[in-house]
Length: 315
Image (tube, rainbow, N blue to C red):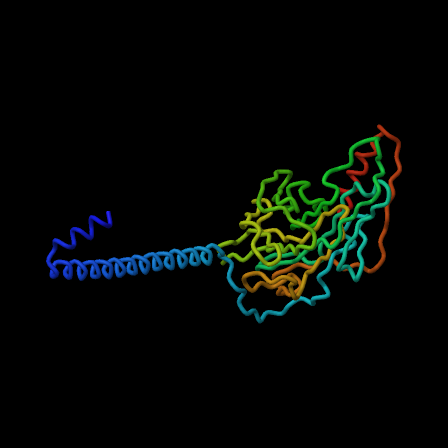
């Protein structure tokens, strides 16, 4: 084909060859210009798409920075886990900032639960919980049965006063667990990814009537949103809600503030930094407690008596 092109050129006038070369150069320049225009258009489209994605992400997080609040606050040290409102197998350490359960023998199969001394009535506040160690005690059941699963467990949520300390038990509490489920009254639904050890979990409780996420709870992990806002059940709306943890075979670090370990994408006050009128404090303890150990004969109304005793002595 090259020989054919050369032969054809010999029969063309010189001016024709010159015109053809000029035309070819112009065509190449036009093509390059057209390509550059197309590249600019594509770049602009990509920039517009990125901007729209950023706007969507920003509009997707409807929680905003907490406004300045000059109202009197509670004392930070007044917010802690209430040992008078905890199960007997809860072992606090380091002034209650770390929690361990009893794990000797069959104790390893029991859940432990503890409720805070401060309950939330209004506003938007958060608290943090992190698993700092997973405990693996020697199996007590051996071959006599199957141990409860999972062996290591954490649930964090809120509950009403005098309700069960075992989150997911009964209608008066809600919780997230480390498997990523949100639970109320035994009904579980997937709401987040599975959570691992040494990740800092934050529970955001939004009771601010002016917020678009009013009467919801949200889970955050290491400062990032882990779940969509979950609405409070109707029976819990308007009630004082106490931060609560339920756990088994793990050591926990519980942080009520006033400074978070992992900051959220927006400014949010912690429970220990709450305005006094937004919270309710549990009754103080004088250091003395009374322990009742009921003893009864099976099938003689023992459990009915215990139920009646608890009803008449809720505290």
